[in-house]
Structures are given as structure tokens and as C-alpha cells.
Amino acid sequence: MEKLLRFILENIVDHPEDIKIQTKESEYGYNLIEFEVNPEDMGRIIGKGGKIISSIRKIIKIKAMKLGKRVNINLLEPEA
Image 1 (cartoon, rainbow, N blue to C red):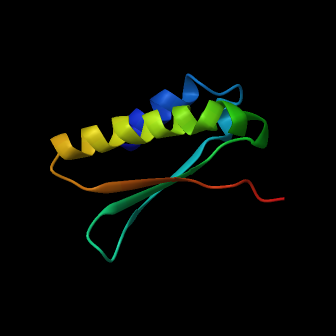
Image 2 (tube, rainbow, N blue to C red; image 1 turned 120 degrees about the vertical axis):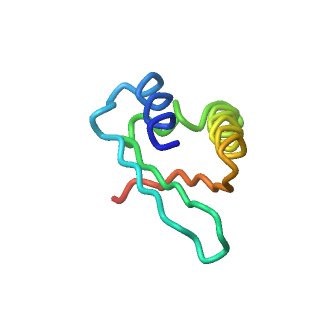
Image 3 (cartoon, rainbow, N blue to C red; image 1 turned 45 degrees about the vertical axis):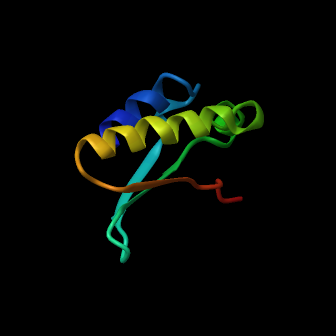
């Protein structure tokens, strides 16, 4: 799923070299995928009304369901 997320993000952002993705196992039995992008790309990832990030989450969750897994995806805010 990490490869799929990276592929999607690299084709949206202007700074693909700044993408950072971490996958963790949650205590509740699902995978937690957290990712960061360049601050200049935040608007592109979120999209108008959050439509882009919502679509990314849906795609990753569909892939997870096909693999029999549960997943949560979080976009981390860039550190100041």
C-alpha cells in the first residue's frame, strides 16, 4: 500500500523528493499510514473542500480491503 500511496502522491505534488511515508501497526489491529509532503504541496494534497485527500484515503482503503487489512491514513502537518 505504501508503494501505491507514493505513486499517487508523486503524480500530484511539485516536490516528490520531499514525500515521507511511515507505516505503523496500531494497537487496535490496523495499519496506520502517516505521510508528509512539502508545505508548498499541502493545498494540492488536500484539495478544494478536502476532496483530494478524501479520494486518496478511499483508494488506499479499497486496496487494503482487497488484501484483507484495515488501514488509517493521516496527512501530517509540516513542522515549522
